[in-house]
Image 1 (cartoon, rainbow, N blue to C red):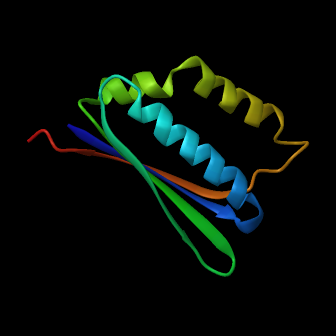
Image 2 (cartoon, one colour; image 1 turned 90 degrees about the vertical axis):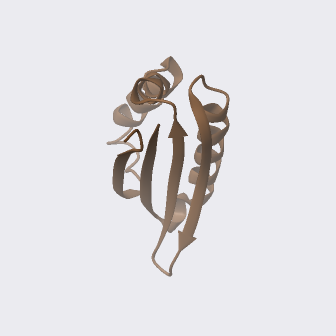
Image 3 (cartoon, rainbow, N blue to C red; image 1 turned 30 degrees about the vertical axis):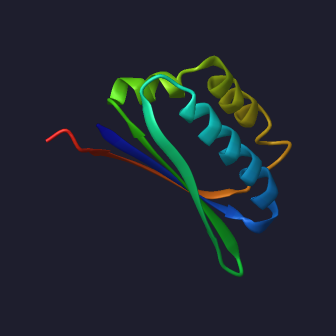
Length: 102
């Protein structure tokens, strides 16, 4: 089993958009083969918000398959295309993987 985390530290103006995005991602993960659990943790201070997605997977390949699904790849393509027109609200993104197999 592996645990995947991804933390998004964002500007306050992106809070509602990220609430919708992370809610959609959690639902998508929970319905995906190999996902054992998924949840989103949230905190904020006066200058920023942080969304931490935490998911447990049977194995790394299952998580990689979730990342490679067409709608996820398209979201990234669209975000990259719109970068100049609309700056990102993301200040920092930190992704980690923990292996619980041993």
